[in-house]
Image 1 (tube, rainbow, N blue to C red):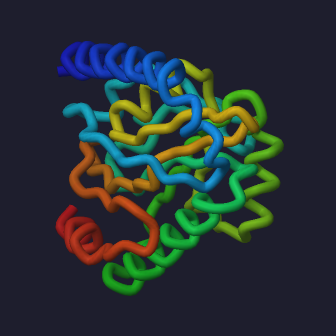
Image 2 (cartoon, helix red, strand yellow):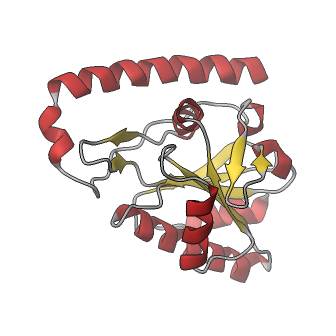
Length: 204
């Protein structure tokens, strides 16, 4: 099962890379829309996130693997700290989701945000962002190598593209991950209804 997920992810990774290459050469005008454009999401790869052989850096500077939180459900999404448009709304939606889950279940959910920006979003930057947003200890901010970020985005079905001004166009998606590492529900777009995700969380 572990090898199956990795193979599927690699296939999707190369397909996405080929698409991005073609898009870069034939749709240059699209790159001028600027930060804030939301890309459509894709279907993610099937398998457990815990099978991905990826090591991340937390906002604390500690090394982190997703399988370290095996046994507890969590919500995961992707963003970047310098984003001024989509990401703040996405984080606000996730904050509201966390409040609703706590109200419904009495449990504080684990929330995970992984940065698209491997160049700028180091642990110091992510820690400052977490403090600025006044997010609690149940929130984890992760950064990693560009190829690992791309691999995770493919698994989660999150599309992103760096544009000419150094910003990113990207999907706005957050996913509920089961105790075994499987994506069991997800929400696309900002300001979207989260009832089905919350109901699924209650069943885990």
